Amino acid sequence: MDLKHLISQEDLIARRSKIKKVFFYRICGAGMGPAAVLIKQAGFEVEGADSAFYPPMSTFLESTGIPLYKLDQVNPEFLKQYDLIVVGNSVAGKLEAARMIEQTGVPFTSFPSALGSLVLKEKNVIGIAGTHGKTTTTYFMTQLLEKLGQNPGYLVGGIIEGRDPSKLGDKYFVIESDEYDSAYFHKISKFRLYEMTSMILTSLEYDHADIFSSVEKIEDEFRAVIPNMESTLIFNQEYPSAMKLFKEYSQKNPAQKWYLYGEGAEMGPHQVETHEQGSNFTVRWKGEDIPFKTNVVGQHNVLNITSCIIFLLSEGFKASDVQKATAELEMVKRRQEVRGKYRDMIVIDDFAHHPRAITVTMDAIRARYKGKKIITIFEPISATARSSIFQNEFRDSLAASDKVIIAKPDLPTTALGGQDLDGEKLAREISSKGKSSICVKNLDDLKKSIDEYAEKDAVLLVLSNRTCLGLWESNFVHELKS
Image (cartoon, rainbow, N blue to C red; front, side, top):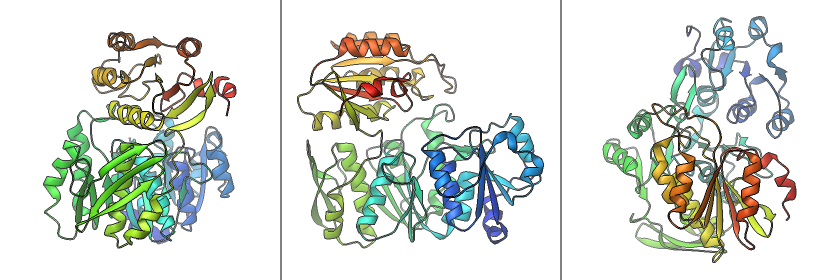
């Protein structure tokens, strides 16, 4: 590894005015594509390359006029025409592509560093961080600011119906602040490079077992940025790790405004009622209990909205205006997304892949579909979910369903020192709790099990952050009815 041309965040900020042409290597990544568009919107000339181009990212990039190349068109001479190379996280340090980039003599960096240095340094950046709820809360905050007459910039790490995944905007910039690492040469959390001025921490517990050996290691990533933040920090007090950070830093910098929310917090949310049409709750602000209502269902979504409300009130927006803004909010795709009906069952697609996320998603589904049975399909596909770390926790969270199908991919975990999740054992233990459960390992058996478990007027809840053994890419989708 030769890092003599890796440009530091400080140098990149200092040389910003001298950079004209930027090249994104592996531009079609979920973060790379939106970041490339933001940097183009900021006035830079941007081009990029990848191995293949597929919608929706390819059409998004093409719509912005960014020239795109195949990777086999890229060589050292080609790259020397650029002032900066942005390297995607999919480029492993052992690859020949990494050696080629390092040896061009052109400064290179990761997309979080490029975005932070070239775009976000001049913005009021609201980082939405946490183990759960980042994408949803980022989208909620973006919508609320828009409803309040602002023109926020944003970067959302999910698919949004009828909207691009990123936008430059004006004063405020809302960004999903992921704790995953940034590049083979930047083994630090992405959010450490985003030049955040404010932060909402929705949750903090152990995850990403392929790069973190403990929750304390994740806490350290937050310790690297909290002291440097200039404005507002809003933490969910229900998480011990979040409270540990709060106690460490909340009294150290008088320029920072700290707020806690969550169950039992002074600010709330209080008097939460969630039902089929939405949710009602109150938030205490300056001694007054302010009522809110929203079309969004579920305690976890009420918490996410509450964090946004606290930020907006702290920024001086009128409570009456914020009340109106919360009434109608949209969700990101694959977050409690109704995909249609199959054999008279409502089919819902959700991204949950952590025990707590499964529990809160299940609670929201039960609130919205009172009295209906829930048949859950769970694909443990992330490095943490594929490991035995949460073997017992998955058993307990999934047992809240009426029937469970474990869609276990034949893929070993990459968790540090971890063993593989035992899908058969998980199914047996759920069955021992009186709930029918089976473990399947291929698409044909999955579809067969769906048909065997089907019940009229039930909810079929599919929990996966990929394709669920190919279910969402199969003819199952075409069999769904509206």
